[in-house]
Image 1 (cartoon, rainbow, N blue to C red):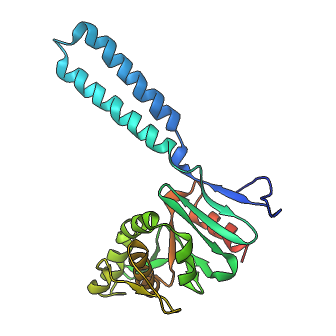
Image 2: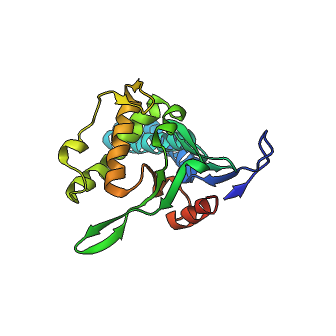
Image 3: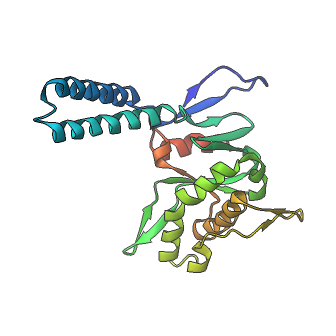
Length: 224
């Protein structure tokens, strides 16, 4: 983790880098270079190599698109302060206070009578409803779809029923008595099913980190 300047409350913030921006300039430069080569060759050989030049241009477009997409990904996956943990995603962010975290661990499942680790960091909350106010509907909707593979595996492992794995769009009733609707409600329903299956509410994928999950997990657990 990389320490940076204190925030406005004089608490040091540490950032955990995201791998999303890795090689983004190589992709952008490579895409532009391929386009230029295709354009120059087309001035002379378009008639003879029309199909090949179109294919080369398509490759350049793919490289350029990947590079631009990487450019808009967040530079950091996590921000760690003395009071809270904040998760950054290209579709938004969520945050939780440390005193609301009960456990941080690597989830496991059984395969051929052996236990195997999942490529996630799992976080069990003491009160999962408190995070609902810190997430946008856009990110909640994205996380519901990104974590479908976890739901499918949970059904295969017979940890939840197939009915529980179906996207639940019904309103979620909070313990305070009011209801939440829309993507955040679906996300809360899914978190309850994931907690039943794996013992955690939040799941941070290995793909979000430049480091191994075990290293990030140990760094986070030091704040509990």
